[in-house]
Picture 1: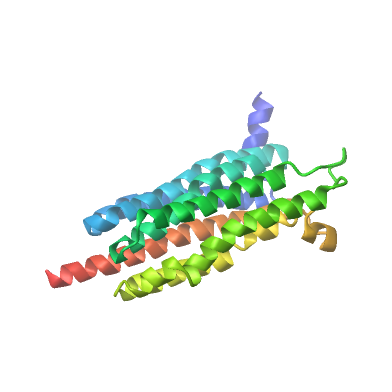
Picture 2: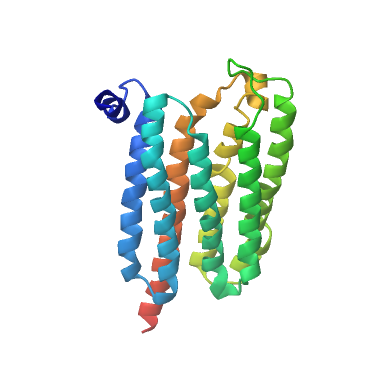
Length: 258
């Protein structure tokens, strides 16, 4: 038992993936503390937005606390824990779009459409990644590629809907009608996060056994953990900082008018 605890808490010196699990955990925990404390510095209507930002990074920090130990002790990709994390935090990111655009006329149906697309993206992505047919040695079995492609395409439909909404659809139109430069630039920044920051997740999906990048280029899913960890921290903390900047800018306007 003592040896097991020692193994769990020891970071291999030559393993950058383990390092990013630990730093990702601490970074997101610190971000949560920051967002929760800063709620007191913004107007009442923006407090819930910062609360959600703190919940996103807080939930991620808890999962990274467990994922870091799981990875250090097993050396394996914590797929189930990642998807549990994403299934909670990605819909909350969609809630942020609604909260920011509610003053511009966003309806509750707008939020639920984004959440539905996120759930579709994540559930089908998990089925495609966690249940891929494998041989005894962990290599792709017959039918692995067709399984990966089918569920990957379905998952991409959800992602494409969120991406379209942020860049051209309802979210973009609501931001344009908001009469707020801070909201418009903030939604544009979040759209870039969805386009660029979230792109690492389908890339990682295609690196699993049977995935296109795995079969075509030989990319291994284990190596993607490093990029997953960095992307998670950047995306979740970055989302929150954009929300914070909008809340501060809009609260500053209210103070100036007063």
